[in-house]
Length: 157
Image (cartoon, rainbow, N blue to C red; front, side):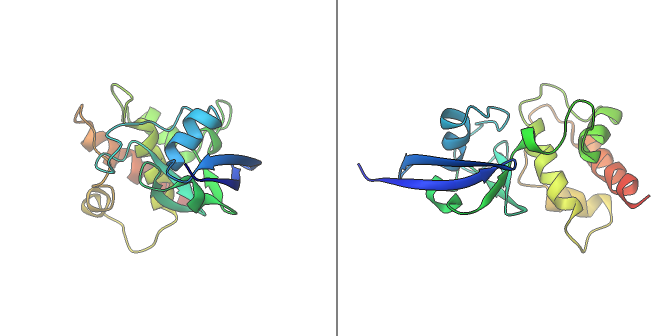
């Protein structure tokens, strides 16, 4: 078993962790750092429940090796807002009732939050296409799309 030291900033806090080189970023976050907001869904990159930001870009943490985060910045659902100061996407999800069981919510919110910083999209069809890697087993897709568009409008105002 090969182990390496990983220095990673998670939600603004520096961490030095020794990890098995086969360990996923998802497992580092959930098991080593006790940040359980990032969900383990399929563990195969097919559902998007484990979406985090790596240096500001959307990443599936189940497919990202922990050693790939060395020297980089990771943002999880715990790092984008607080109960008293929600991220615009979190507020829009509440306002639009864009979640049901909650299993996909963290990944949906993280994907949508990164999407707000991306260019070249403006329509509901664009949102559906750009967030197609985030699955919702409850079928809240219309409200998720509404929430993303609402968050964009709120951010632009």
